[in-house]
Length: 583
Ligand SMILES: Nc1ncnc2c1ncn2[C@@H]1O[C@H](COP(=O)(O)OP(=O)(O)OP(=O)(O)O)[C@@H](O)[C@H]1O
Image 1 (spheres, rainbow, N blue to C red):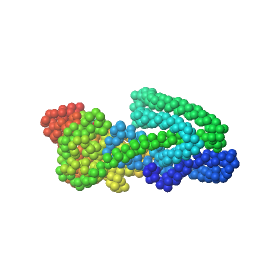
Image 2 (image 1 turned 135 degrees about the horizontal axis):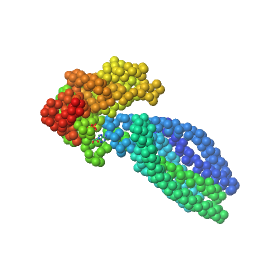
Image 3 (image 1 turned 90 degrees about the vertical axis):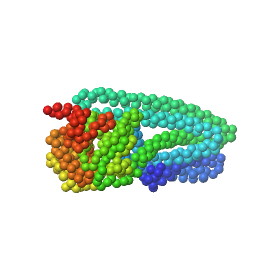
Image 4 (image 1 turned 30 degrees about the vertical axis):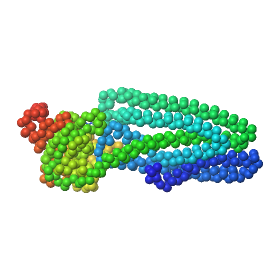
């Protein structure tokens, strides 16, 4: 309710009034008719009944014509309010665990699907309306005979069964979220250009279509089983209600003949029959809405709590202006959130010192833990045990956004930012996004000069084939722009290069590493910056001051190229293997 009132206080208040009014008005109309009938049959005044009926009809007509458009506008306002809030919440979390943990991703996907449900939250007001309506019906039945209240009890029981059915449907939707996601992934694989090539060359199309159909029928079968079971129960219930209503009517007619009830009483029961039904249905709808809204809001609230506990508010310290000592991993262990159940650790008790002003290379087999070390340095996660220290200050106490502003990073899985070319590079330092001089320098350093000069409007070209006049780039060209982006930050304390040249041709790769070497030397003198390089190419790795061999989440060897070669361990073995291959 507070969400609806925050989105639009005035409209929410008007809707409150309109919902309550409409729930009282229709039973009151029935009562007014009874008063008129009684007046006529007993030759007394019908004035009060007529006035009441007139007022009811007038108010219904006026409020009815406003309620629809008002409701639509409020729906729209709440929808966009919730939409913005969800974006803010998911994008605002500084860590990335919620993107990678399946359970968290499922919940967030459900919240996004629930946006409509959340937008209609003000309809919860009709719970108030439903209660008022029920009280009015109870009062009317009571005025004829308390025995007739049994009809309402019967109708509510049927409505309760219906509500139970809805609850089970929602539970099933929740349980099957992973299937929905799998279905979407398969659809994407079949329709998106990046996977299209492999799907066709391996002839996977038909198989994927069959799997997608199986998933749909699996979801559909269980859903329709629940739906049809409850449909049978509910229709049976209404038949019993109908019989009960007929018995009630016959009983009341007999009483009227005996002079124990008036014609007005019989008229009231005739008119209120459908009202009982409608009231019970409204109550079920309310229960359904409450269940749905509690469910959706429970998740929405969970996301808010999650964001609050992951906003790292406690991390307020500013990063140092320059590194004097260096960066230390002290007893660092880490398990990915998605692997929590398995207790598999990606890093296990790492103690490592990266001295200020040096270039360090991480090497090791696939899955050894190199990228995980890099992610902890960028504070995309916090270690599960131990800590990362920046000049002796725990990284967990440093403001993550301020820290990232002092990092320049190039990744293997780079983003293809389909903006104007200037922006695609410029967002590497948002504050200096408009600085064309700086962008041009970064483009040069990232070896993206030929990419830009090849574009029709240079830096002002729209990138991305999906845009009118947009230009598509090759994988290597995109990577060059990503590298240029990484050169936008001019005074980083940390340069992270996680296989950033995988898509580049050898010449560009050589040039990039020369550029990085020059940057590393300049920054080492200016800010004591540490350069971390992850690479499988030993010709690049050997240039580093310190080489760290990672194996099974631990540090297995450490030293300069010369020292490690002399030691004759795993590094020496792999280096020799690669060098022989090139001979
Ligand atoms: N997002 C993730 N969720 C769960 N486990 C992950 C995730 N990313 C990596 N891992 C696991 O953590 C371990 C270390 O992975 P990491 O990416 O650090 O290896 P790497 O040494 O960089 O490998 P590569 O050379 O292939 O890039 C692996 O066992 C991997 O399966």
